[in-house]
Length: 368
Image (cartoon, rainbow, N blue to C red; front, side):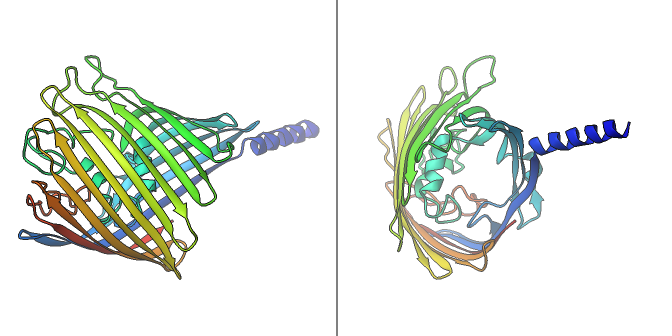
């Protein structure tokens, strides 16, 4: 009897060892003082968050299934530590389950879309804070139905209405395995889950090559609009390319982003580009960029904006950093894009057509 019990215990231990699993609690708390102002208009100073990295709370885990196969989950939500709001339990930043092996990874759930990866990876400011690439601000700023993404009152109301500019629900993705000599990629498809039309259905992909100091990637995506397409729910087609070269003394980054919005009554094209750099200085890093964007619609409107941004990050440790950023947006030809577009206080200071907008972040980031 004792021998049988010992044998069962050994078998149970062996089974546990062959199916090892781990669960990790992780997060980022980023709080900063920010000032937003518009030339000839309003200004405001706020305590906000996510000026360097997006504040978040999450859980992730992996189970080794043996034979090179593993299963994993990732649940991550947003935090607003400046006011104590914790929407992290909704896990809207990422909510996925995966199965991976030497053949690659299948991932199901809400996640970043392929085209967003190029915008954030090849932006020195990582699409966070006032230094965020101006094209991304134009894509994600909140606008009224009579305004386009550059805040210009005209005939186009489509550029701020892409539900898949950053993330998508209901997505099935395949990722290439990491052992392809520097080549990487993914294919993504999101169900519309609609019984009447394909409004909201999305598909896209991203493919790149990164080895040593060099990294470059191209991505594409398409969002189906309403049937027929309308100004508020247009068909959106996006492609972009980005790259980085690490020279040792500095990293050079660049990107180009092209978005086409097709609606029943009017169409529009939003084009943006950026060139920037990261310069290590002792325990810190200087960040700088210049970016520009222009929206053209069939009504003959062509509002445009450009931005330069300069920042510094000082690492107190591997997990804690102090940072400061200053940025200035110049609006032209009717554009009224505010400096804080796409940020937590996006509506604090509205832009004025043709006027410049500036702002700064001064904060602390701690990760765990």
